[in-house]
Length: 308
Image: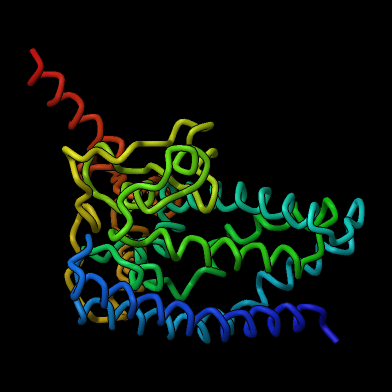
């Protein structure tokens, strides 16, 4: 039997457990916002849409999971060691997989093909636990899942790698909320928190392309992508170019449609076509669009002029 089947079974079992937990917390968040006037906002239509997108993503992504699972079990035959499962090795695998997630997440913001998948998650103009379920249906087609292969090659079992990824995603679910303003300073220094992740979902110029962390914010601090939430510049959520629709096909595939249109435009070079596919989001052959780096540069230039 193909070992990857076991991985699919494990992943499915975990999802059957965590989805009801997610839904319970989404309901609880809405309840305390409405009746206890905590931080945050409630938009039932947006929440229901996010939950629907998330629930639909489970069987769709599961159907394509053989791509990632097959690659991991293929890599297993080339392991340079076999790392036994202990509490210590599980923690080490989790930390390494968290670094893997940081790299994956940063790639998804800097390369358009991967952004085609990830922009679905950023398209909501509000921020709450339900937004965490607003996930693409194409995560196994971006190529970044192959970043898990090195973990298998050094000796971790694919099941453990998969488990660490699910555990990381579960932690991240709780970072999608406005009800928690700040956690203790030591926790904010080490871990990803709602405050840090609100920055990541913001389209304010100074917040763009920052705080890619999954569980540990130390990666952003180490690699220069950390930005603190500023109470004088509160996060404005959503895409730089707003996507106001509740059509799931548009939300999931609109960027891919744009990529297809640009790649097959007339009168451009092969290099242009490649850059429309793998260049930064917002890149254009004629400079008519703005990348996030352009938006940030323009913002800081304007700030500098104001201070003169």
